Image (cartoon, rainbow, N blue to C red; front, side):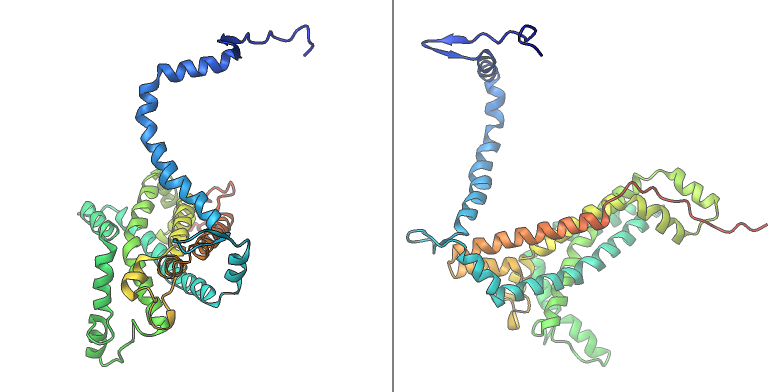
Length: 328
């Protein structure tokens, strides 16, 4: 655009001795006009700045320092992250977390999908079943961890009593490495299966029934309808549940902490990343190293969320009609 055809610049609005652009003055006038609305939403932003943004920024700063919460903060550079890479206890916590995540996530999502498929059928008392499956998610995890500790107790637990009644050997659920991991995984499955089933059920209810009718008309079996119609259309929902389960599994804390204590059980078999970060920050009072562990967890969760997204994301794929043999 040439200088001759350029639109005239907005004339500044003079206030006192200075010149304020007219657009800026119009913005301030709008704020002053609608100040009750801005005042109504201000508490959220104030709370977010104080309890959300400030702790995040401060934890980044702390990860480069050496501070016990009492004296002066000493800048340590990358020494906390260097020690993190060489810390065998941290990598043990990473291994424990991923093993528990695999043991819990795969069965949990499979059971949730099966339960959602069954609840989607025309059965009686569907509302009662939905409430029953969702109830563990809203139950206090602290109370249920105590209950699971009694159920899986090595000496007087219900599970070992049942095994003894069947003339089988009892299992040291809370004293062996794999027993601890399996117990925590069972707690996660019990708590979140119904939650994911309700999400899958909402996705199933959004699938048009015409597709099912067309598949049945072509002679498709129930398994073919489930694998070639339901699963492809539920791919975005499955992606969401896998990512949320990954983030939740990597940040596991309440179950091992209440069930096994801060030490993570025998041989630290139940020591997860968040539990180890809690011990370093609030038991050893090494807030710098605890912040470094927290940001390492953030990186791990982000990487695995991206991997899950790449593996399960929908690539413009539409469900194919199942092929069936036609008989005369």
